Length: 472
Image (tube, rainbow, N blue to C red; front, side):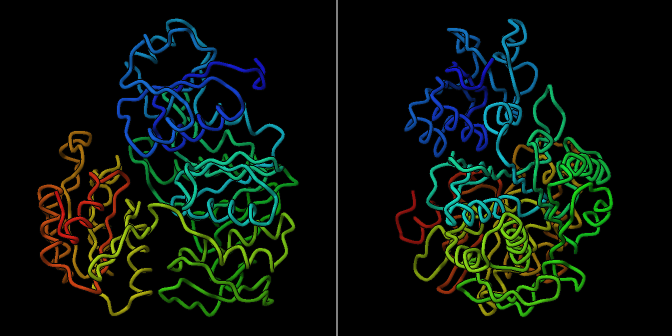
């Protein structure tokens, strides 16, 4: 079946960020795209509606009538899903999301794949922005939505395809990491830590997935790797391609010096093999975003962008939604939405905000939600992750039944650990209680960061409404 032939393509679980973005891209190629999902709600439902992609609520074999030519099955779908079962029964052709992306878009393109436990979305968006502003018109698929983009996808006419490479599995029928499907020419590895406890049993298993990715890079490709990360460094000798490291170490090919953080962002000097290339600035906070920026500089240099073009484009980056995104400022209180859900991400995000606003009072409002977060694996690490915050508010564990009771994150113990470290920490039972607590206690000059990988029940707008005096 040629990917260029107009097809009827149906998506099971279409409202995920990556699935919805891929659906939009296929629609733009002229295919007839339909979809279904259990939870159909904005913003993705709105995006799909604007693109003329019909979405059915819930899962039902009737949604497969008339019979589609191809079904794309999301990795949130398990055996027992009525539509997935019908696909298997009828032997309808099906693919995982990363397989479909490769089949329809990646052959013939030059794939630039950004990976790592943390920073993938910001780095991918920053790279796509830098290349696009240089006039190269890349395609891109990003796990978040860049500011001023409607979705995390862009279908360009240029030779480059910028991809956020996720180590999570592809589908219930394909347990390989997603990024193994992406035909990588240049790979960025930001960092490697344990995560995804629902599919990986140890850090060694995650490292093996990255080792397999490196083994796919052609000899004329490039590995851009964080030289400050021990797990990443351990893999570099296995590459068959050139390796360029980045980081703060003296031996890094691309290194940062003289880092300066302000409310406007972060500036620093860039060294290339020990020689100064000049100063750059990005409207992002934190040392982790310095590393992300160095990775982008390394890739931009490798594909031939001039230093001036790269530095100018970095300076104009508009940011990514849900990555320390300012949702509003009311009565002097700044409200952020952040995707952080791993203790390292929580820690670096809060430390970055503290560096930008050293005298401000910072509130961290955290919802334990991911399959890893709700487990006890990071119990101790979360006790240290909030050190840069002044006050911590914890929401209940989301869907606690998805973690075994004897391996479930203990909010009570986390509160005790935070208080032992001198933090003003409290657990509140639900979103209305959190909004009321914050509205009564925040003051002008405060910064409130809501941290969750989910929608957090619209708490951001509810709190902003409470500050305005019109919360419902």
